[in-house]
Length: 332
Image 1: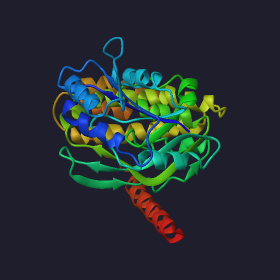
Image 2 (image 1 turned 60 degrees about the vertical axis):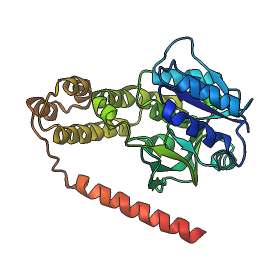
Image 3 (image 1 turned 120 degrees about the horizontal axis):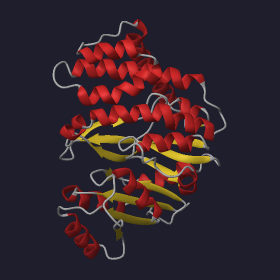
Image 4 (image 1 turned 135 degrees about the vertical axis):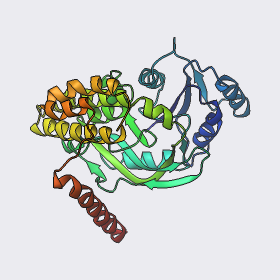
């Protein structure tokens, strides 16, 4: 197994050196390390030049033909890699020293593995340790079509802690570029239709959070529009790619996720302009038959969900996670 590591970057020169050094200092080296500078306008070029001087021959720096969207730069970066497996790491995140070793060991657990996912640790803007994220509700090896079903409400994994077989990336057409923010989830769905997803319970990376909160809030309408795209296009495409038809649970999951998203948004946006969000939610409301609830959102109502199961569900998930964790500890 040749595991390549790509770092797509844009205007994160303040974090970039620490990111690159984290992938250089591995227990088992990556096959190659490639950084794609997406025409950054900050100190990125100078940081990369200094790294290449300090670590001659250890990293390769590339640039796309023109400035790209985030998902486009992900795909461009992968297109320049030569390993049969690859990982991508955002240029503000960090790889722990065991990243490459743990991924390679996990990939060997199934001859049909197409995707490896790991556990990760959240860190704050200045690198302060926050919470650990273990995927306690997934199996070590998950087979299709469960690879799709378990991700019906969101991705089971992190962009900061994954590896994918390159031939599968090629087969499904890469990261779907019609979703800017949810391209990783889209790819996990498409790849999961073609083979097994393997989980390593090792912490393999650190995901930096909290330094882009304003950006996240400003993109909420884009996120909602792309959620609709996942349910309307990508999840059905993944199911058909795997030969499963279009299962009824896709529509049911879309409706439930729509209600949760709309109700949650109405509570956060109790006042203010809803116009962008109204247009983002409208096609999803029509597709799920939830026009009545959507019309209340249009009027500016703060929505409430009176389904008692929605209150119980988080408690049940927590209980299942606790039981799985205990069983995992006892098995060791």
